[in-house]
Amino acid sequence: MPFTEGRGSGRLRGVSARRYIEVNEWFPGERFEMGREGWNPDEYARFADARRRPFFDLVSLVEPVDAPRVLDVGCGSGVLTAEAHRLLGAATTLGLDSSPAMLGSARPEGVELRQASIPADLPKGPFDVILSNSALNWVDDHAQVFAALTQSLAQKGQLAVQLPSNPESAFSRCCEATARRFGGELGGFVYRSPVATPEFYSALLERLGFERQRVGTWYYPQRHADVAGIVAFARGGLLSPYRARLGDERFEAFVTEYTAALRRELGDGPVFFPLRRSSSSADGEGSGLGEEVRPR
View (cartoon, helix red, strand yellow):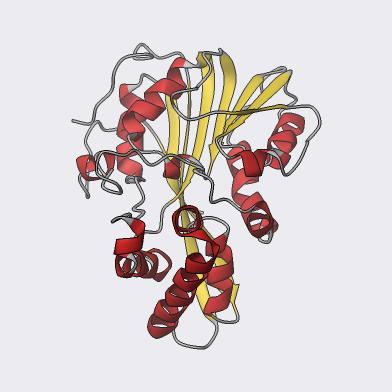
């Protein structure tokens, strides 16, 4: 898995960070929040193994700490939060998620789960470890979100974040095209990922004052017999905000259109989908903790 380590250069190369940080174009005047109820725990769990691997890879980035206080931001059902609690030997673990459906789908032992919006309801901590797996891609303004997470860390605490990022793939492009065709019913809503480049997160962690960081891109290949497999995976995540806005009947019409768009581009045969995820981890007592951070 490609992974780079080192201090941020302070420069944002490639795609402009401002394009991502100011990407809230979904509803004019309305902020899109992770988990506005469109989540279906059963459909999310259909690909449990595929979703577990990135989580455990993220946890593996955390350096051993004696009985850490752990926060999991975007914990879903909390099943993986309980695994992190066990693997890290945590003294306490708190999981936050904005979806009542996801929080109500399981009752893992050893952890506290709480409904919350991020970053508005982020607890002050301090926490020795903060994890976030496949959650902050539903929240805009990552510069401010990462700054808020940093403020909740204990001195020399560790931050580990993983973000799906596949904007150029047929998986995402066909979904955006379908959303535009349903534009009237969706009020103009189109989900566009706020996830920026690895260079952006490296520079951001540097400006936040972390002493050490590892930032990179990991790939998790999926192989499906046909596009129906990709659609089934998308129903547990990417398509959730459309379910929330359309209702059951029109959502199924949306899924039909999305499936047809994928088939036109990818054909009727087997499909290989290299799912890309951006990972960032950092630790250290930094002088920049708590300062307002904006990309230069």
